[in-house]
Image 1: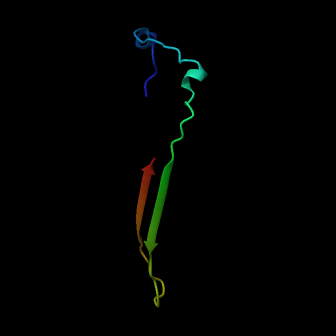
Image 2: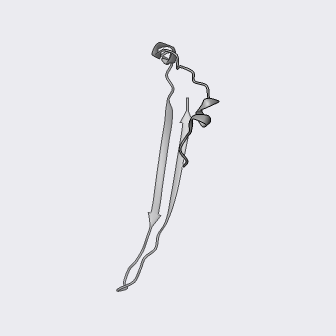
Image 3: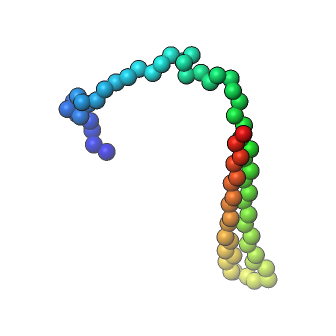
Length: 65
C-alpha cells in the first residue's frame, strides 16, 4: 500500500457525520433466526499407523422477520 501525499488528499472532500441521535434506531426490532449445522465423519478402525481423512459439510440458514 502506498503512502498518501498532499496531492492525493487535495481533491477529497470531508463530511461530518450527523449527531448520534440522528443515527439512533427508531426502536423497531429486527429478529433473525440463525441455524448452523456442521457435520463431519472420519473412520479409522482396525488399522495401525494409518491416516483417516474427513470431509466436513456446513450449512447456515438465516430467517429474518
